[in-house]
Length: 547
Ligand code: ADP
Ligand code: MG
Picture 1 (cartoon, rainbow, N blue to C red):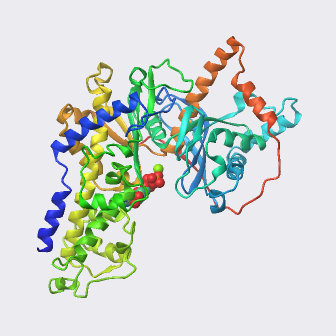
Picture 2 (picture 1 turned 90 degrees about the horizontal axis):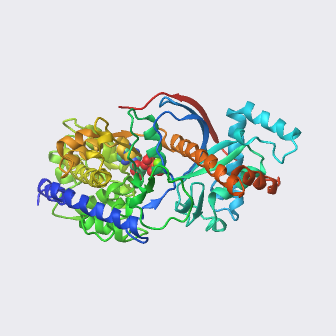
Picture 3 (picture 1 turned 120 degrees about the vertical axis):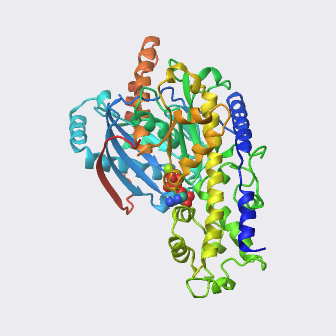
């Protein structure tokens, strides 16, 4: 078969028709509902204990920290109450030795020291004032509760959350291994170390990045109603949405504020349809899954997110390269190769290595509309060490990459459509003149050309949405989602604190501030080992977002 014909056949295998989109949406809603009823289902539907979304009028100064896979970010965010904010942040790479520290306290003490450094750097006045007051005060730390920074803690590892600032670490991922921390409340681990340094900071909320995205978007997006969904399309994919408490049938372990009648649910939709009822499954999807570290799980994520799209493409290309009847990246093309040189693939090319093809080159392929595809061909040389590819090679690469990217966007539309339909907002009178707003974050949705357009194309084909419904859906990037979102959740938590403090005072139980005081008085300073670190500090003012 010619390369062109073979390419067409491959592209066809990545088709995801309107009919399949509709089947997918129905199944997604079914699996969402199943997850609200019981544990152990494909969609975990984890309650987050966040029961309200912001509307842009929130005000105040909050802190946020984000422990990702590689970096630790500390920021303070001043919410101005008019959908704008000012943000100061510092970012530091987590020392490798701490990722595998013997004791949890070694890692968390490092985080606390970074928070202290940040406070000195960016809030020197506040910090000094409190240090002085502490010296002269008779109470253990001498902080007035209202002067304590409320902090949101974005922690992107699996935790079993049982309260707005309480969650037990289930397991480490992404190269971390601190066995001592497993099963412990990560908020308490951090608070303990903060208290040892006598910092005026309270870990007020534990935050998942999807929830942060939802919060950040709700705060910054114009309009009366908040976002209904926050979604990540980056290394992985996941979404958190606003659910009615009445639909949450499975038991909730912790305390929460039920006055809004709603709660944000973290779907963990990466594992949608692990049973492959409706997900497409080419032989390359199958091969990717089989050789992954977690075969049979995260099946939706393996067809949608940045970590996997490049690998699917790589597996297709390797099959074509190996086929003697097809001439891809081979010199038979050189009579028509306008670059007049021999096509070669370097032995160490990423194309021959698992995970060796980064999804970002697919964005380059999609964006290159030059007649000779010279930008893509250059990129194939510099990134993949495929030298002097012909125009036909590049055309095949682009067509297959686009088919995989397009399928991913249409699959993304399945989750989005399901949540929009399940919410009932399209027919809700409160939303009559308001857009159905969705906040997104992640390099894939941010940088892949036309990703959102392809999502909309699929949304228009969904029964119950259609042309009219799709016009009312707005999908916008949530800028600085992890910082702003965590700050907003800290604000919500602070509101809950005062309510529950009033309630506990009435019933004679301990108030939260008593609890903090006690925690503090328990803590003792001790010598802490130092590590060499590189830090990046910055301060910026944010106005509003895109559209
Ligand atoms: P994280 O998920 O860790 O927060 P990102 O949102 O930046 O990080 O997502 C990183 C993922 O996005 C990687 O899998 C990478 O391959 C992919 N990616 C990075 N840049 C691009 C791009 N320009 N186009 C498409 N995918 C990209
Ligand atoms: Mg991210």
